[in-house]
Image (tube, each protein chain N blue to C red):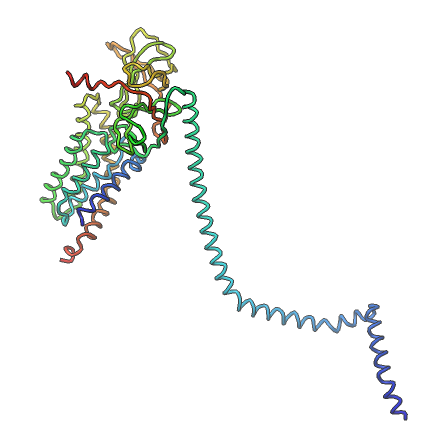
Length: 279
Length: 166
């Protein structure tokens, strides 16, 4: 009887005990005990977790390295492509600046018609100051046409093919340009040299030439249109027993950095070859 | 094959000459890459019919340059004759032949250019030409000479491998 009654009470006692423990746990009274009891378990779990992570890393890292190497390679390619694009864009900006400057110059002289061309080479002989441009007779360029930049006179067309032309610069030793001095109101000639310097020649001894005078084309002879700037008088010399004064000219155009030029297409230079042939 | 190659090689050299060579200048002189190549080519013992290379060089230079054609023909023609002459006498030492042809040829070519311009009525001063163009060009030619010689030698080995084996 007693045994049977205990068996009946057993689930109730166990249920009450569990409920009591739960109530104690909820109320926080068992926190320290649970913490103390769980601490070794947590440590064991941390240890196990670390080892599992290490094994997982060991198994997965080689795959990640391959992926990273691929990504790295892709990014490097992208960087090189972008750098190349930046270079191209910088070059385009530079060319655009030059073209805008040339356009500004063309707008200031609406009476002339222009063709813009790029400089693609220089004469293979060091004795000559010629440049080669990328436009030829197909674009309406003919021998003798004047060539300018936004700064001033460059030279004239010396030879033409269908797609390219050769320009004789005013610094060439064979070049001779009739000029006038803006302030002094005199006519003279500017000649080139093998050193690339410009010299003002045939200046009358009584002419008052001063440093800084602007030198412009006079239009005499009909080889160049008038009033195109060439440069400034730098130094004046009067050689002994000479009939004329001489001066060195600082050109306004930097011939060493010539990249784009304008060809004046509606100017027809006077052709003297017929006269020399008749002789 | 070797003769056909003369056209692209001369074109490339002339292209480099008009775009790159003048960037490396001393005073107003710069190296003449085509002249260097022709000097290096003619002294190679295995090379035959080198006149084809000179002819292509002359034609293309006359087409591109503003220099009078007579000066170009005389300059390269002189180098060709000089090269053949020296090659026969110094056949065991092509490098020595090369430098002899190069120095004499380079000076001669520039003198031909100088006098052709003078005869055409351009007033040039010899002292100025010597100090600003002729001597600086010669120095630059000497600087670039050895790499060009090696290239020419490599090309002859590539073009005439069987004769090398003999």
